[in-house]
Image (tube, rainbow, N blue to C red; front, side, top):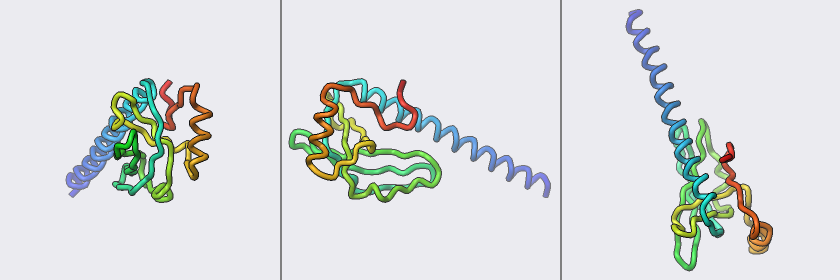
Length: 140
């Protein structure tokens, strides 16, 4: 009986360690992608959050945006236990996309777009400056 309890305890510890490692690697990979995106020549669009997909360690927000008349879909990932910011659904935010590959994008939730004037103001304010990602741990 003791051996079985010890085995179950070891399995739980192993599960927590593997899950933590997976979460760390996933976060690091996404952070690197976003940092590389913001370091490349970018354009801006308005993205509409369509829906979200939640699992215990991550929520993915699916958003749509348009570049030069072509529709794109992107995914914004929020890592952590218990993520559920359903208030994002139906909201519009600035999308930062790579000029060379508009399908490579990031939904920057620091900039909520409620009217067309909000987007015009954003463009005017950031035309001469490089935008920083909204990633919790900045790139540099």
